[in-house]
Length: 209
Image 1 (cartoon, helix red, strand yellow):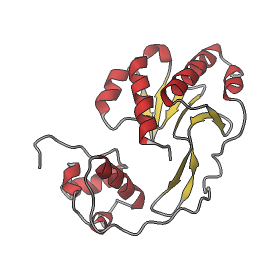
Image 2: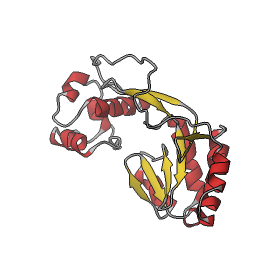
Image 3: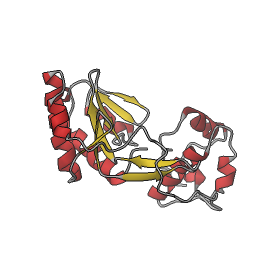
Image 4: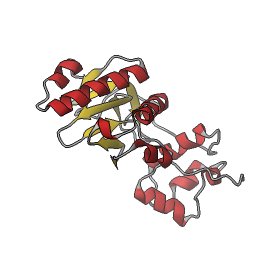
């Protein structure tokens, strides 16, 4: 194994604890292991196995003896999230505060420039770019955008752009993170070049779930 650490991807707390208890702290330790052996660890379910599988693929590594995965049917089990067909720009321009309108329109530009895609309004309050159909190892599947944002009253919520490397966030400026989300209070307080880098990387990775 190389002396250079190859960190594990972002995982749920139970999955991270399961790997730590098994002495697995480096992604290379999973290379060549049977998927069923890893899935049998208490706290590590099919969804987190998929996260590990994707991380291994990105590092040109792999599990052995893959567990059978469900085939996509094209259905959308997540009926709360769907493209609504409204105008993202018109919706942003109708927001109640000038600050959110200003930041929302700037995000509209940044995401458009970095993805090369037209924005689509998903549900009542999210602007998304691209389309992503996902299938969890559990069999649940659905439709989503690849990257996107929502200029909510409490914070600017950005989706699909959280980096695997925490050092990137260290260069961004004031922020909070949640499950798959990045929260900003004002665009003026962060480094826009770093945000552009994160949007481009998130787009290349390919999808919010």
